[in-house]
Image 1 (cartoon, one colour):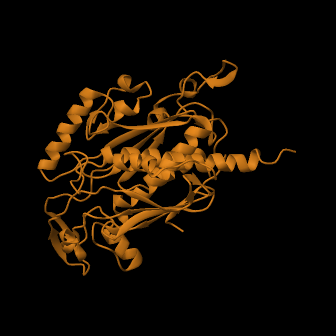
Image 2 (cartoon, one colour):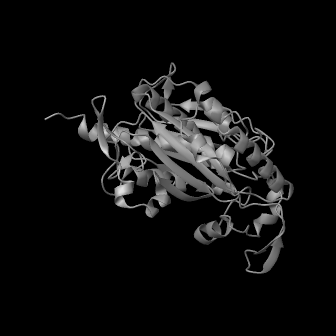
Image 3 (cartoon, helix red, strand yellow):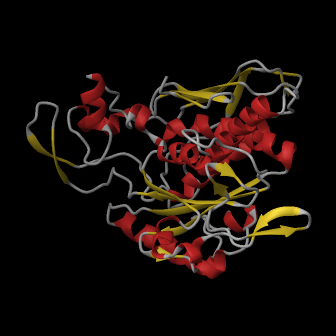
Length: 365
């Protein structure tokens, strides 16, 4: 069903923005993995609202409850159920949106598809749905760390027209460097300019978008499939399933179109007894399968659709009208999207790692 993701490591998220709670059911997690609520909470704290003055002021602790799937602190191989209650609900702020469609939001398309919708904060289309993804991703990240020392790091490289210098982001940043500023850009000077831009557009009741880069090191060669389930294809699906995403590129991405093959190809070499590439314009994936180099990809986010300025729209009866949105919204979704990108990356990699093991390592003939 469309609310589930993954083949062997499967998650199903549930809940609406202003409903009683949101959560996730994880199926296919290997047994024996030590997991604590505190580890999951650490990831949710990076995603939660109200962290700084450049994100939505909605006050939610986002405290996770483990309902099933663990015994004495370890997974049992059975479905894991995680829940987070919604506490700071203000559905009245969305009364005007009961009949009016917000421009560039999912209001009209949900109505067209289902004939009914939850107008309170967008219901399932709200970024609050991603709580379940981040909670599940915390478990996936731990599997990857224990199984192969895989480390995932996402960070903001662009807000509006402010871009971090490419040379300043060449090294793999630490978590502390990413989280050192509210905007989660590891280049301090650029981060300061980004924060000022976000504050400026917020004061105008407007919003901005930008770009997040994600890098993963420690990925073994062999993950992914050569045709429909190419690793980069599943990463793209994972990222473009997130609210407000509008673009995905891996490795050289669109910039690679300006190179010749002789300039773009990643030459192979024997380095410390392993097959490696001299450059990494492929972004760690060749022929749909990981090659052992760093995964490097970028995700583009549009400006937040809900803005606090009057906009022309139509209502559910087709009459032209004006909408002045209220409520609490992120003027820029990127700072809180960083842990969501990491979570979805981990979910894709764990699923493919399990598939690789099932097909190629279980039976030896």
